[in-house]
Length: 194
Image (cartoon, rainbow, N blue to C red; front, side):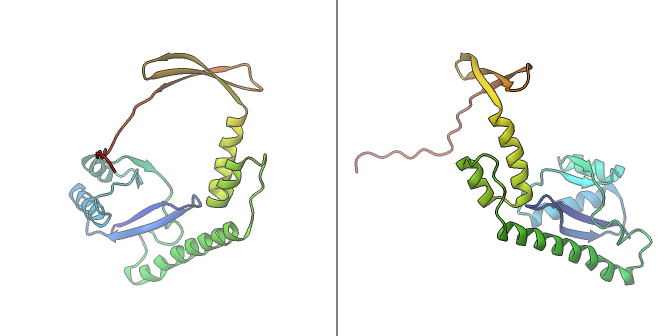
């Protein structure tokens, strides 16, 4: 019986389970049905990617539901496989979920009870340290430090297009960045007088 887990990434950059299904077969139509049911449960909010083992039926179904697919190790590796009897499935299913939940709770505890090491005492870095989990903060901090080591200058400004030259302080290599400013106004409310 095919097993289809819906996994994603939480605020600690760890795999997490959103839901799953036991399917009667692995036909393309079954996966299309499953993806439509999933979208319905998610209020038609499409995920950024569908994680799959690249099975041809899944790949075709993701194209029909206009989603990207990318390869990733299964959330349930080492716990459930195609030879797991249905009678053992429920017990085996709970083990990785409990393990992931414990790991997430530990990361939450670390994020709530520790203060991140700040590298330059910039107010933006300090704010990020307060609002991000430790793993996301480390990503932010790495990017932020790289930005601080950049020098930039405007080369060209034409209408809405701007061209910048960006150089890392300790490198002789210059990168050209093209930026097109787009103004998008969603709602405008006008009224006369007070």
